[in-house]
Image (cartoon, rainbow, N blue to C red; front, side):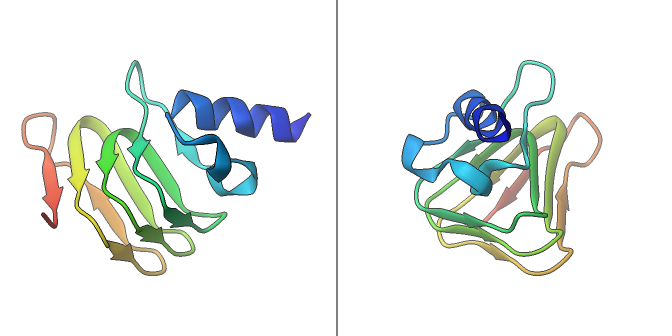
Length: 101
């Protein structure tokens, strides 16, 4: 049951099927926007990617790291790593955030 729910979340977030299972537990759509992550990526079980987020390949989020795009968009380039409890957020609903290329 839990594995099906996680697989549905991964499909909603447009994550390739080979990256399902426990890696996608914290990919969360916000309104009509779902995160888009390029493969490969490495997400800790307690990391969260929320909303209008687009990330390049080799994104790494460690424990409790959060990428929260619940207004404007967040764009993350290739080879980005966010350590324990790092947070990326937007500046209100007017300015998005760009990290890397």
